[in-house]
Length: 114
Image (cartoon, rainbow, N blue to C red; front, side):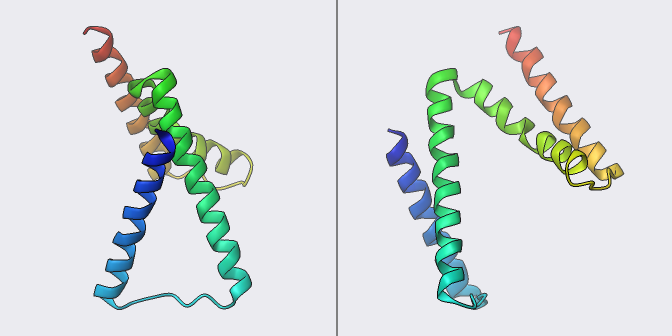
């Protein structure tokens, strides 16, 4: 189920970052308990919502359309950052958008022939 997949992916990601922090020995101190609580709630809610949504999207529309939507997500982020937040549209952003759209188009064209 989507909840089990979400749970295990978050557990293993947490373990990975715990081991990484212990091995590398670098950590970032969080200034207060209130900020710790806000960070924990924000990360849990957004991660859980994202992972559960991904699992249900795969279940309802299939893996290929879900992967395509996930691949196009950075393009939407660029459009929002340029349109709403007046971020400068640089050559690297344009190149990234072109590469992403090209990859999605190639995938769609080759999957239609199968």
